Amino acid sequence: MQVFIIDDDFSIGHTLEQVLKPLRLGVTRISSSSELEPALKHETPDLVFLDYRLGEESGLSLIPVLLKENPSCYIVMMTAFASFDIAIEAMKLGAKDFIKKPFSLDEIEALAKRVSEVLRLQNKLNALEEEYGLGQLLLDSKNPKVRQLLKLAQRVAQSQSVVLITGESGCGKTELAKAIHHWSSRKDFPFATVACPTLSAELLESELFGHVKGAFTGAVANNQGRIAKCEGGSLFLDEIGTLPIALQPKLLRFLQDFTYERVGDSTTHKADVRIIAATNANLSELVRQGHFREDLYYRVNVVELHLPPLRERPEDIEDLAHLILFKLCKKHGRNPVRLTKDQIRYLTTLPWRGNIRELHNTLERALIFSLDGEPLQLDYQPTLSPQQTEKAGIHIGGPHTLEEIERAHIEATLARLESIEEVSHALGINPSTLWRKRKSYEEPTQKVESGSQTTETMH
Image (cartoon, rainbow, N blue to C red; front, side, top):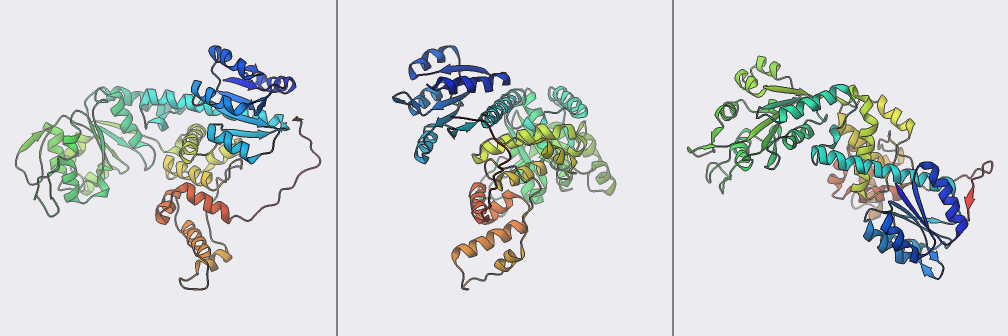
């Protein structure tokens, strides 16, 4: 990582350099705006410590120059002036952080390490996206079984065989299906998903094979169906074990000769589409019970790929958690967060019955209900206190303010629902708005400063 220190104070520049160099960072010191352009011809900075005052000039004027060279450059404005307006102006121009002199050298070291980690994760994200394609990032693994599975999946992707992905809910079956499509010769053609449990038998048949106008009540126009729309590509049938028994012969026929008819139409159509299926159920048991055709089972189960649950791959939890947090921070506009070793140990002790999906929800909940700079409360579960229970009994038309009614409703909803997405959807607000409102309800806390410790600072 390349760091620029732009400050006309020699002592500050020298001291910052001594703090950053042991971190194996490339450091370039610049004392005036005239030195910036020549420096940019030799190095592109990832992190910049920029002084607000450079002689008679303002460091603010250099922010657009730096961002033009590297739009993702992390600019930290330094100033001895405790002005909120300066911070706002710097942020509007594209600075990511603001520190006031005198500052702690420990703070500088921690900030540099955080930015370095962000860059490492971004590089890893880019590498994974290049290798797997967008959406398959959660498959990177240190677990030998998963790594072997991915190698097998890459080989299978080059064939035209039907693939059956098995595993518990939330363990990444959809991501693996997308990866197989991306690794295959069909990657430049459409990929679509049909969630079998979400539709009735009639609508599911129409969704898969299409229908003609007037085929049933509500069919006001022709519908091609997902199979036709995925011509040349791949169709992912999620939870195929729930496919209605009446539809199974039609899918079997398509898998045998790639022909089908639309609902309400006798014309036979043909399509070149690869089927990838997934299930969290035991299909052989469903066959035994008469809920799944045996001939369809053998046609679907040409190649089976089994994804292990998260609890069986604990060595992946740390990297998965940091990758998910990195993406969540970008989604919610938050500064990057790094989990502590104790937090990682805590995460590895949990059973993760909901697998990666549960890990994602846990981290998003913790992020939304924490403030910037605060440790994440990973075990946070919204509950109602006796006072909140009383507030939850507020009735419309009673002697209550709108703010009291809103707060009671939000806190009751937080206690009732499990995930942030559910709460936000139920309230009709986005997660960041929910986070700000929850933050405003917190009681102010007293900060106790220890007089027994001193921290080295720079003026």
